[in-house]
Image 1 (spheres, helix red, strand yellow):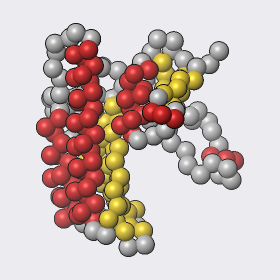
Image 2: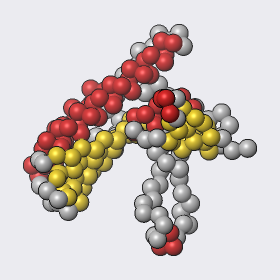
Image 3: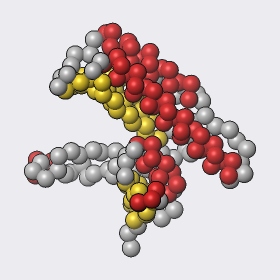
Image 4: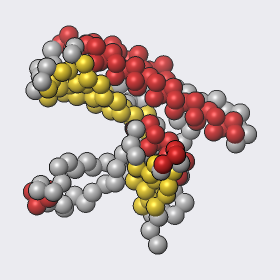
Length: 190
């Protein structure tokens, strides 16, 4: 597992890096095989509070968790616990989906060979300097085709209220969003 640990206004000591490695490797129990996985860990300190953000990709599904506490080690523990909960939730939803479809295959991590993404890919030619007055953050992620159910699952895992994805059926950009009363909406181009 390739674990990238970065400090934002904090020096990442060997002890912190070792603790992160130990805790993140605890998540390996959710993986079928040990292919190379990239894990991004960002630690920061703001006004005395220690924040840890972790992004992990498994079979194209992006899991993200963030926790803040008054101790960096406690934040690491909390964020790994949150990721474990997300991975368990994902595994159970996928297994339930297989059971409902009548398939008897039991899986550990992912039901698809496709991939999920967090946000639409932006044109590499975009001049960020021109947008700085209005746009405060730009994220770039690859968009791989998925069905609507996978997009909703990814949105729920990330804890977002909307999710932009490429629809595998129509090959067009779509948006799923959370409506009131726990239901979902889908926006498609004409």
